[in-house]
Image (tube, rainbow, N blue to C red):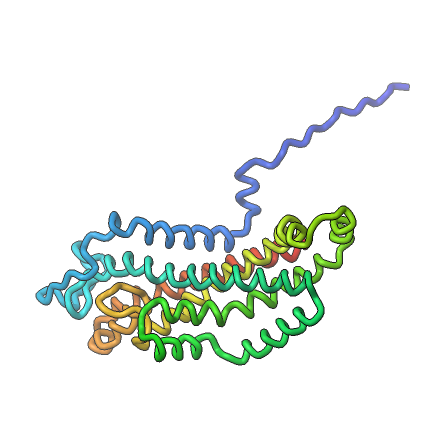
Length: 288
């Protein structure tokens, strides 16, 4: 009888091309667009061919051409240059809103979960009340009190977004708070702040990151709407929401390039942030 010998089969790890094909195309496109928007904002002086505030009445309301890729607005300013420079203020405001709201909401939520009792109940009631105030309403009221610009709407939206982030983080932190390893850390003599910072926070950080990215898209849309109605960034500064507003008259006169260019940037960037936030949230939930 002949013995049958088997040849061992070695399985090679998947190649980078195979991993790329299995990757989520929505996630890849969202990351690429968000990174591109940030790079454009950072390199605006290098990318813009003209001064965004430079006017030329003789070249007013021109369509796209080799000299002006996106055309010119009603006073002859280069729309492409204004879109590129507009990325700075259009992204700066949402980043400030999200940084402030995320820091405040995360700190409040983890503290409420750790201390529990009356502090947790009080925070829950405050969050319920805060949800009754729309973010745009708070932003408009802040502008009425402190004047138009970037500071007042950013602070108001940061206050309005804090409850949303705090509620999401509280749910995740509450789940972590009752896991056995937290009790083990307590029995080992670790202090409450150290447990929160070294153990609870890192475990809820993926969900915090997902919520922050999603909030970037929402705050960009809110700040753009505030500038659109004339309560945010003021002329002659370049900002996407303000550009949509400035191009309304030209749009009715058959020159829609300014409103279309700025509106396209707002829509695509908001969608990219939302899609990226959803994918990060799905991964955070799967990890949890």
